[in-house]
Length: 79
Image (spheres, rainbow, N blue to C red):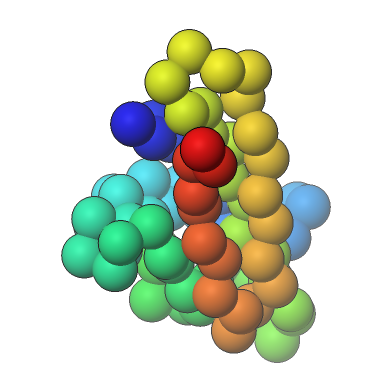
């Protein structure tokens, strides 16, 4: 199973907690989330933002994943 530990969307000095939206998209889209302002608003107008996610598969070490604004991110637990 996949457990998300941390997620934020924005730029270095301006970000928002995208927890609920990331969780909902991952469940609805089978592990895929789109990095966009619909996650938690626009914390940095007129700047390119990034989605940052830290997650864990089972008892493994935490993994980090990043997506630029407009990109899709797939969080998968390899087998």
